[in-house]
Figure 1 (cartoon, one colour):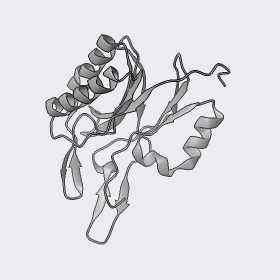
Figure 2 (tube, one colour):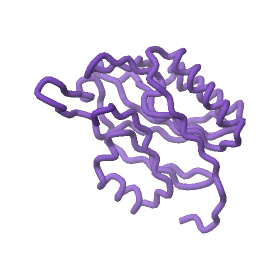
Figure 3 (cartoon, rainbow, N blue to C red):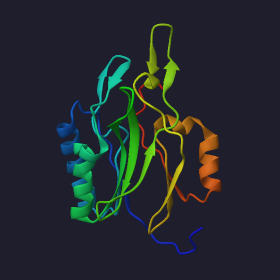
Figure 4 (cartoon, rainbow, N blue to C red):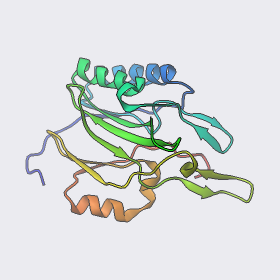
Length: 190
């Protein structure tokens, strides 16, 4: 563990799901600018900060390839321009077999991707006989826990429903993680 302690001002942005990339990016940048002006050194966005269309129990996040994802690219530019670390809670990245990855990114203050994490535990749940959520119908799960060394701490990335699986956090903690990140977009009923 890091024996030198220092304060780190972290801002957790709370956004509501937006239906498209540009609206989602505009919302995230506006709140991130406010956080940066207030002195935040590390700015965290929520799960699916890149957009999410919801209708009843179904959801459809807009997706793009990682290299050209407009929200990822926009937040990388923000991180570089404002010299801030940014956690992109998650955006939908095109994957194989017509599925997406629910992928989280850690961006350094130069705008570089220093780590990426694909949500491991997908949200498949029956709320009643008539209502269920099946994230696995559209999302391909990840298979690797991630710890990233930063100038201020060893950071572990997870996403939302991963929280319900304590063995993951035990493994991350035992592997030296000092900060556990859990960006989430839980539904009202869950």
